Length: 122
Image 1 (cartoon, rainbow, N blue to C red):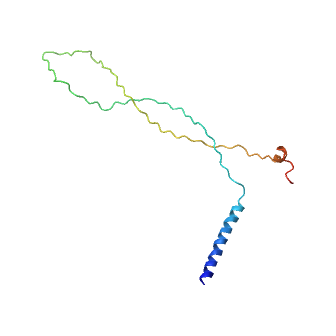
Image 2 (cartoon, helix red, strand yellow):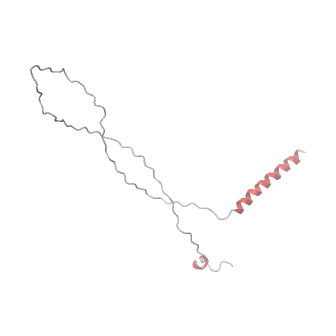
Image 3 (cartoon, rainbow, N blue to C red):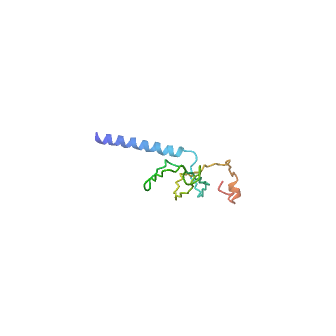
């Protein structure tokens, strides 16, 4: 009885393999993949910006208190200007990609004649 069971399972596996082979044979056409190496370039403009954070002040030395004076040295409503420079590393995330566009399909029905193989056994 064990032999019959093994034989039956073998037949089932054979049928499944046969179905898979038929599916493979029933496919219409074939597929191909083509590759093209390309250089992709995108212009990038870096625009700088500067935003002032909260100013922190530090007292340098002791305050000077002058009695009998009603004016201060310097100009009224004037400003002091200075620069601060900082070297930066700018990280720019960029995604490169490509879209494929295909043209109209064409077929060369006279291939056998054009390539000099007009006598292909037909």
